Image (cartoon, rainbow, N blue to C red):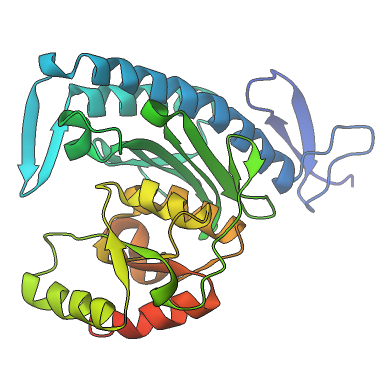
Length: 297
């Protein structure tokens, strides 16, 4: 009896390969590894995020005409958010129909544990966006088997594309980033995020501890973009008591690719439920973890 095979069509190629059920390809056939599949998605995403960012930027240039809706306290959206997400979702569904999708505006599709899933925020920093500030971005991340494989964050109004992932360098506009050498929060600026899911009584003690430790803070209004500033050495660390996965996974992949440390964001169903996030080099991460005590839920 011969080795059983299953025919697999390579996405976008129309080419059929025969995959042995033992996990190898038949002799003479093209071998497609998990690494190849991730590479294909990574390269596709680099082009897609620019296309999506250009669309969002056109809305930004004509933002006075947007219809703004309030989803909840300090959480706004417009047709720019939805249309940008739909563009990304449709492009991914056409090229990688086997993958699941989680977006801020349209939610999550049917998702099995063995599926890859795209995690997308079409406009992270909607408040700055509708206010005419440039601190907003598009974020795309890809997760497979519970592992964050890669992410990219594009700030079209600033012409900055951050990218990186597992076994990949962290880059800004295709050039390797340089992380900050700080060893204490006294030696630079820490990005701070805030979510209405956390009460002021929970948030303010952490904020006070940061200041008493000699730290200084910055808030851009976009968690993804601020995390990228940590990866690229503009900030020394980042801390936020609760953030959704679409707001940060793209940037967390870049942070890790830069050789920096974050908490295990995907733990305890962080993909769907969100989690706190702490980021920095080993020393800064340890100091921020102490400063944040009390809200690792």
